[in-house]
Figure 1 (cartoon, rainbow, N blue to C red):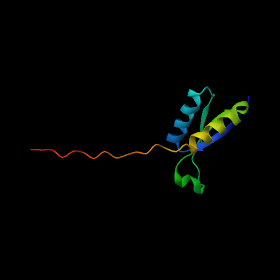
Figure 2: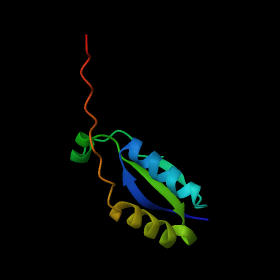
Figure 3: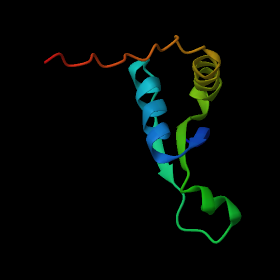
Figure 4: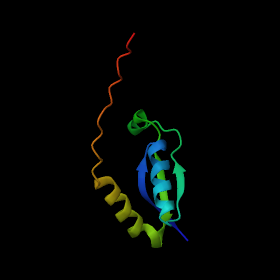
Length: 84
């Protein structure tokens, strides 16, 4: 069985995507890029989310839908003033 990258991101985001896919039954692995002298290394290490070839189209659709989903509006809560 061969594996393909369906997503690439910094470590924290890659772990979130892996968990998202696993909760939906998609088998996943993470592969980290090693140290590099390339310019992309300036933005931090990248981690690839790998899925089996058979699952790749399904995983890509799920990741794209998740990415396009608009986040709910977050309203900041202001702390109350202390009285006294």
